[in-house]
Image (cartoon, rainbow, N blue to C red):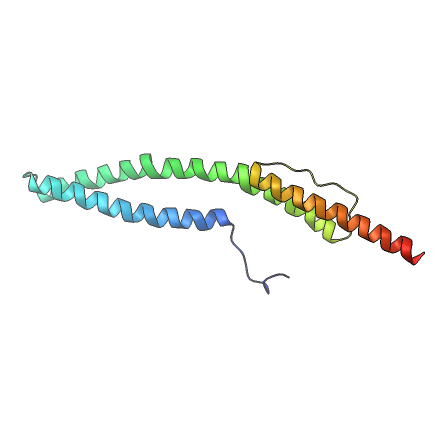
Length: 136
């Protein structure tokens, strides 16, 4: 097994971890800004605490969680899905199936990667045929 049995996480989840940490830091900052702004304008601490907490939760949900979920969906569909499909076909290739062409999907970078693998498949197939012909 590649990696010595170490469990790998998707790049998407690593990105989401970074976004989550950033969201928490932003939420703390927003909370304190709201809280101290209200306290400085004469709002009692308890009331300021409630409104700051409610405002922070609303902003976090509206401005961070929603977009993060949309970004996650877009990354899964446009990056990870084509890579996973290509990986399955490359696994078959590594097992000796050099006759099945790679179906190349995705945007520029993913498509370029797929085209490079397809050229490699064709080169390997031609090389193996020449070797078999040479051995005969």
